[in-house]
Length: 189
Image (cartoon, rainbow, N blue to C red; front, side, top):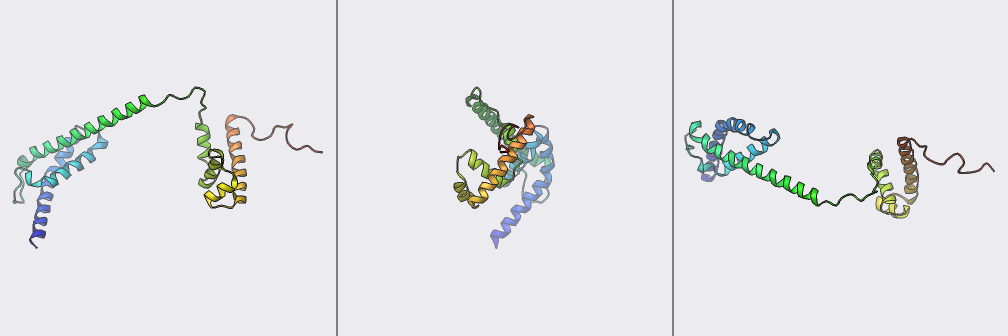
């Protein structure tokens, strides 16, 4: 019972502290951090205040808290959390920069497949999976059927229709007609 009472008293002290310091700390962080990071830094500050509740100067058992007693220390905690956030952001940016420098340059003559990827994105998920298993993995319809749970016949039909649709979409974008030329294909004989 005593443990529960102590926990409730601690929660009440923390809530009283939050009512006093939440808004000033939020304003403090808004003036010093990116607006998108303020809430995260404030949450981290509140967590530190919860963990170090007994260390907050001027915070006694009295429910009445004088902001002048607690705010300077809480600003110090917020400042530390802000410094940690800035340090983490600098590390992240350095890592991104290092990765971009060490990334292999594109192979000369390598085709840009953005148009193909965009066209593939217009397909349904199952049709896209069937055509990618066929084109990129080199699987025959029987193996695709096993991978997708379809019948080999259903895979063949989907593959035929999807390839036809892709050819049509890509042909329209490139200004060329997809399919056979006028002199190709079946003869009338």
